[in-house]
Structures are given as structure tokens and as C-alpha cells.
Image (tube, rainbow, N blue to C red):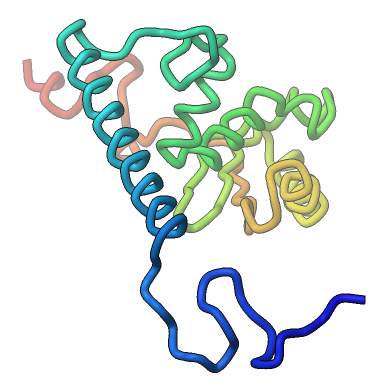
Length: 187
């Protein structure tokens, strides 16, 4: 059994609990001075190392990996995309490249993505006939769900479907074949 002192338990630094704290003396004072000297030496060494590296022309590569080591091309591109905040536009661009795999070859043959509005989160798709435009309008909710599953929830809110463009606009009911406008008839 250990014996407790009459004045109560002692702490290593201060003496009995409840007693006024005494100033460090002897070995404790030497420990505090040694710790302060080590910290100052460490700080001086770090400053000297930085001055030495600056004289040599900057940091040198060491044996361990750091942020200056070369990266594979894919990792460098992913890092650039993340730093610039281009995750969504890059993902949507990937969807435009993988359009046939997402919608199937038959739909992809007749419908193509045109553009993506990032602010409104609307994907615009053009179809080559009104039949395919109607078909894609009916498939739009399922396609939005599939795209959001692939890109992340809420990336695409709406698919805007455009049908085929009409013939070139001709002004006036009577036109001569091959004419360039009203000015060529007054020759």
C-alpha cells in the first residue's frame, strides 16, 4: 500500500493540492529552459533551411512525394477540373459524348444533344423528325432520372426537345426559282 502525505495528494509540479503554486526551481527550471532552447534552435534551423533553399534557386525535389512531382495526364486534368469548379460542365460534356450508350442506338440515331444551360440545368435535344421529338418528349422524365443517376442528383432538371427546322423562309408568295431577292428582277 502506498502512503498518502498528511497534507493531501501532490502533483509533480506544484506540491500539495490546494497549496499556493511555487515558482519552478532546480530540475524543473532546467527542463523549462531546455525546452525553450530546443524550440528556438528548431526555429533557427527552419529559417536557415529556407534561406539555403532560396539561395539554391528554390525547393529541390526529395525522395518523398510532394505537390511538385509530375502527375499522370488524367490525374492532372482531374485536378484542374476540381480546382476550377468544372465538375458539372465536364460531366455533362461526357454525357454528350456517351449519348448513344445512355439513350440507345436507335434514339441516338434520330436525336442529338445540342447544349446544356448550367444555370437553368436544362439539356436541349434536337430531333430529325416530329415523330422522334414526340417520342423523346414522352421519354424525357425517364431520361432525366437516368442522367441524374449518372451525373448526380439535380444536374438536369428538364429536357427541352426541338423538332426539325422548317424550310428556309422565303419572303412573298411569288418567287422566281434561283432568285436572290426583289432587287434581281429590276435588271
